[in-house]
Each structure stands twice: as C-alpha cells, then as structure tokens.
Amino acid sequence: MKENLLLTPGPTKIPSEICSILGQPIIHHRTPQFQAMLKEVVEGLKYVFQTQNDVYLMAASGTGGMEASVCNLLSAGDKAITVEGGKFGERWTEICQAFGVQTHVIKVEWGQSVQAQQIKKVLDQDKTIKAVFITHCETSTGVTTDIKAIGQVVKNTNAVLVVDAVSSLGVIDLKTDEWNVDIVASASHKGFMLPPGLAFASVSPKAWKLIGTCKTPRYYFDFRKAKEAWGDTDTAFTPAISIVIGLTESLKRMKKMGLEPLFAYFARLAQGTRVAAKALGLKVFPQDNCVSNVLTAIVLPAQIDGNKLVKTMRDKYGVTVAGGQGQLKGKVVRFAHMGCLTEKDLIEGIACFEKVLQEMGYSFPAGSGVQAAQKFFEQPAVAV
Image (cartoon, rainbow, N blue to C red; front, side, top):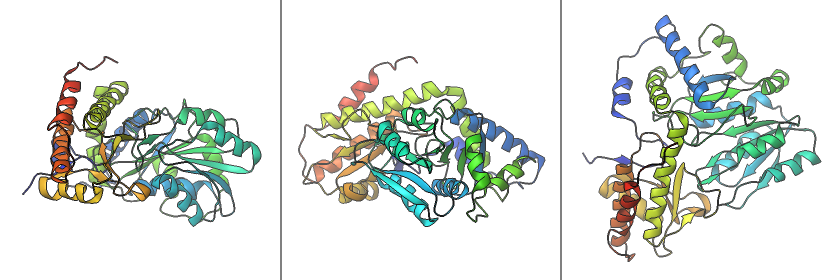
C-alpha cells in the first residue's frame, strides 16, 4: 500500500503515539476515569484558547461548533455582521441565514482581510447588531484576519465577537480573553493532530447574556445543556470518547513545547515553503501582510491544471495537498503547516510538487524548490 503523506489543512497528519492511543479499547464515558480525562482536557484547552472562559466539547466537526455559536446566540430576525473573503466566511453567512438571522455581509476581495474600521462603521450605523462573525484563518485563500484589532472595536458595543478558529487554533496566536473574543469555535482535526469528530467552543460572560435571551430552538447544540452537564464534570451527550482520550496526549505535546515556540515553529514551516515557491518562479496567494502561517497557497502557472496536479500527486505519488476552492479552484495548491508536520514532510511534499510540475510541462531548474527549502531550514531557528 502506498504511504500517504497528508499535507492538507485538515484533516492533518496524526502522530504515531496518538494513533496508538486512539486504537486502545474504548472506555465508558460516565465513569470517574473519563471524568478525570475531561478535566484534564478542558484545562488544557483553556491553555491553548488562552482563556478563563468555559470551554465546551461537542461530537461534531468544526462546522458544528460554528452552528452552535449561531443558534445559541441569535433568534430569527436578529442582526449580525458576517465577513465573506473566502469559502469559510461564506459559511458564517449561510449558517446565520439558515436560522433566520438578518446578515449584514461585508464582502472582501479574496486575498485581502477585513479591516477593523470596516466593522466599526457598520456597528456605528446600526446599534441593534448583536454579533460579528469572523474567520481567523481563511483556509480557502491563506489569509489571516487581525482579530485583536477587531476585538478592540467590538468590545465597547452590545455585539459579541465570534471567531472561527477551526484551522488556526494552536497554529497561530489567538489570545481569546486579551483580544476580547466572546466565542471561539475550533475542532480536533487540524492543529490538535487528531481525527475529525470533536468540536470546541469557548463562551464568555458577555456571550452568556445573549444565550439567556435567545429564542432559537436547539437541542443537541445547546450550550445551556453543556454548562449544566459540566457542573457534574460531564458532557450533555455521548462525547467522541477516543478522540477526547487522544486529545489528552495532543495537549501534553503542545504544553511541553509552549505556545510561542509552537507558533514560531509553524511560521518557520510556512516561510520555508514560500521560499521554495519563489525559487520555482511561483507566487504565493495572498501576497501582502495578511498571509497566514496556517497554510501556504501557491499560485500555479496558467497552463497547469491544478485539479489534475493535486490528483496526480495524491494517486501516483502518495502526497496529498489541497487544491483551490471557489474562484481559486484549479489555480492554486495549498500546503498546510500545522499539527505534527515537520520540515522533512514539507521538503518531501515540495519534491513531489516539483516532479508533477515537470511532468505537466512547467520548466524550471530541477530541484530548485527543494534546494531553496533545504537551505532555509538549515538556518538555525530563531529563539522565542
């Protein structure tokens, strides 16, 4: 069987020791043994979220955490700001509209990030807006949003700030409390190097005021049930037991390294990948100061079919990268920098990328991308 190197921005590669934990015999969740793990996990999540707020677990993907954030805060007819600068910003709009929320959509050109003043202008014009929904890292474009600046704008209004950090949490900095973020939604299958199946949400006291008045019917994703259950160190419904157990190991790894060194490590992987792209005569999307260290989107030569390239890398050589989405479909490939990926993994991925580019007729000095990445990674990492 061909080995598969997973370089996608979720799901991501799982360390062998965590795979071993995931393969252990399952235990029952209504036991003191599992309760002790839950306590450990929630405290560890608070460390990664950088929050003192409650953090709740749901057996769901990241979209489940996003939907829970909407249906617990807003009733039909309430107003919210959503920012669309890619596929996942559009998802906020779609979820809000599914619950009858009136959305003021701020459309941002793909490859750009929304500015805090754009948010402020809308909030100043309409004081009845109850929530602002933002994507921290827009993985369809490789853009990171300045959450700190937006938090400064939103904190002195009646609105709450809700952030999709599904791909970014544990990969780039997100200071939930310090940056005045009221709900952060994330998931297990990206920075936490686990399979899909577990969503997380941190909830601030300001958010709880809205939750208390929300009239939207909800059952499984009800934060009130989650809070009540946590009073007994429990979950309201059956959790993703094996993933929770694996999460104890993920969090140990992250704590051992420390958040700042972790963020610096992923920044280094991103920089090495961008150096390789430049050596191949290719551009990175986006090209300005909002480029994310969560992943690198490389713009393909016009004559290269991106869908075919991704398929060939995966099916012929066992290296899986992500293609473009929406208006970037077939035009970019996306290399992730998260979880347990290493410099060696990225170099292997770049080597495969080079091989397929050559097979598809793109000319460049053989090995130039790999050599540039190797030279970059030979430099000592900067101490944090």
